[in-house]
Image (cartoon, rainbow, N blue to C red; front, side, top):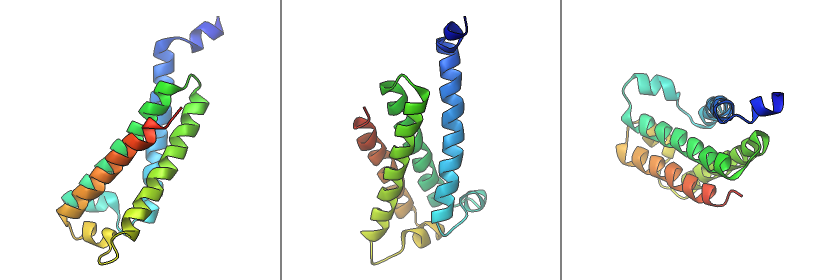
Length: 136
């Protein structure tokens, strides 16, 4: 009886949803630690660049989990792939920062440089598709 309960599509969906929400919160907190600005404070001030960059991160993390849930039967395996994908997304952030030595990404986003915020968003979204395509 309990096995049938846990294999119910509604229960599996609720479990995946809950885990992904928790992971998004944790992973955004980690992103918050590596950026020089306070995401939510800047968004509250109306900084569109921060909102775009943060939105890209949320989409990227969620998209990676979409692929991990789609390709794995176990919630634990899906979480593992999602966490691994997040690490790759984080590395992508550092590579983006490294490849722009003439200016600091965080400083430009904090100054509401919308071009940099847009590129940051697109990088997060784009990398999430590449990462997700490799999840098995």
